[in-house]
Image (cartoon, rainbow, N blue to C red; front, top):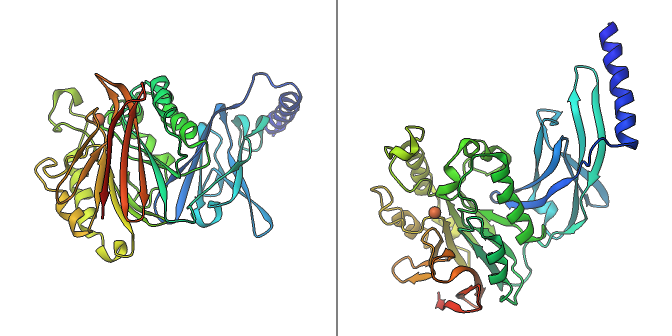
Length: 370
Ligand SMILES: [Fe+2]
């Protein structure tokens, strides 16, 4: 009893001290990014300089709604990365902000808490009203953010959705690596448009790689899923590692054979009727050459869904390959052009693919009519 009273007293005193005289500069270090997780939900993810709680706040039907980063009734306080699952129908076209409070430690009957910080208020655009949409396609950043923004300076149109096509970082060894993915997602989307994330093979490597999934509410529980965005119906593939499980570089610590089998069965189970009303049908996959993906033709189930285009990265070049399922490879890091970004424009039944490098050179400008 004495220790309960003592810890509660200490927590109360410390909370007052932290509120008026924060012992350090607790702040939001990564602004929120709104990740598409399927047809129903977004995961809004951000990071703070120290561990604490997290919430999102927006107004629905005239009432302020707050959703906490919580698990089974408990507000989480033990992480610097915060995530909330939000219904798409409530966030599309709405404004929101996120907040976090520093929590030094949660005792059984008290907690040491400090400063609360809140983000700016963002106007989240959601799905455009017109059937003319622009997709910013970014892959293979590999630490070259400065060059990426140089390439982007040559694009005049604002995107409606960001496609992060993987290999944003070169390894996922630490939480900081994952925060780099989050920061690029937040900065490129300005926290105002949805982000579609396809995992790259480099993002399967390192200690933290197996922990990143818990921050997303993907509808399948894995990195692969489907989503609609206005006139677009899309499949997101997780192409996983690029070499066999037996490769010595993996040191016996991968089991992509089982994972691929599960994902392939899921892909084959998708119902073509769910895509039949879409004006555009696109598959996103970090590795775009899926006709012989570790011994299986993954393009066959995609063709049965009447996919119009497969968009990927991984090869560090910009290329369009025509065929039953045309393939567009965006660029990212490149040996001769240094770095290049791509924009896809969906308009009047056509898809335009445009890639521009850091010097303003157009590497590819191709339009297909569906
Ligand atoms: Fe790659």
